[in-house]
Amino acid sequence: MQTYGKDQLIALADPTRLAVFERLANGPAAVQEIANGLPVSRPAVSQHLRVLKEAKLVFDEQIGTRRFYRVNPAGIEAIRSYFDRFWDDALAAFKTFAEDQSQPKTSDAKHRTDPSRLQDRHRTH
Image (cartoon, rainbow, N blue to C red; front, top):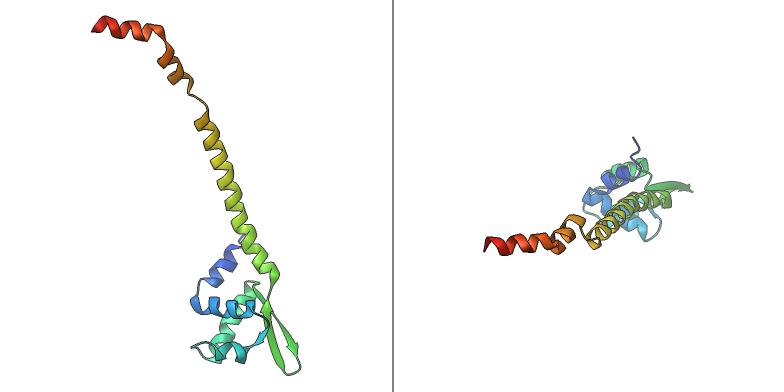
């Protein structure tokens, strides 16, 4: 079962992880820089980054003595593709519905225009 797209959404469901991800959307940052703007400890930020990395939403790069994290475009693409699938299905279903609604039902049209129906109605009154 393919879960690409779902995994990323599950990872972003946590408000702190979402805040970390949003921070990284502004550009690469080290753990300490990310932690400075959040009400959680640096080790907690590291744990959230690990989950985001496992979900392929971020990747890291060692520069000198510091490790910088940045958004992984492939993770964002997975989310977009996941939602595109629903969008395509919804549009196809709407198109089918609209086409069905624009076609007169043959039984309804026949019933309305059937002269014997009108004659029967006049006989009973």
